[in-house]
Image 1 (tube, rainbow, N blue to C red):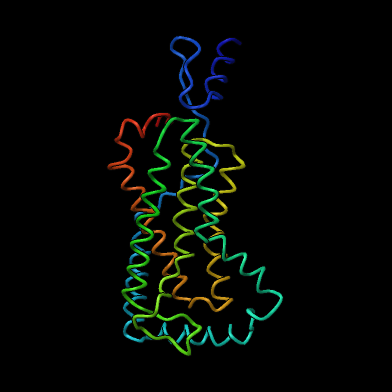
Image 2 (tube, helix red, strand yellow; image 1 turned 90 degrees about the vertical axis):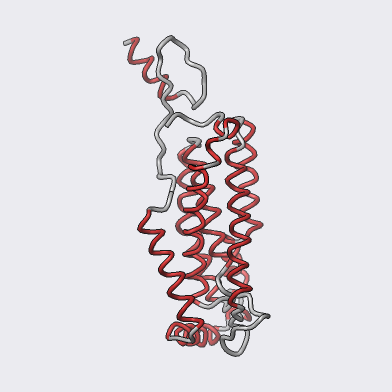
Length: 254
């Protein structure tokens, strides 16, 4: 009976808590969802999608014609001038940087203080830096105009490709989910961030296209770029950031 109680207490103890008895294993509770690190085949697929769509659009291929056809249908809905505008616009903010940073500020601040680690903060700052540099490099490099223009064009005033909101939703909700799982937050928090990391980018992309803010390919490549950047942040964490002694403090045992 005594040994059973000791084992149960060891499982319930939060990571990093001191052991109550000699030889007692400090085993963190199991996560309820996966941390969401992109697999190699998903990263490869995202790379192929990004490169393939970019080449097709720059060569004025079939995907540009598909974008124009979808935009024509969406424009006929005229959601921008309907009562549905504000509810649909609110959905786009699932991928808004302001919305996500509010959640991440609370999450990261709590983890940094309670677990005495800077790892979550370093990951978020790295993700933000990569997102800003890569997405705007694409936007200014391709110069694609938004559907508000009478057609799809590529010139210096264009900044539609890819969708920063969708890339932001994939990357930053992915990072938030990762932290919730690694630091064994409550099951409800883990599941909520899992849903946001999966449904959030899809809902954001659909809403942006429905309001004719972005082309379909903008949303698709935004998602692919977000996946690639999430993989890069995971790789950098494993190779560099997690080797810092100060960053590793308070992390659960592998």
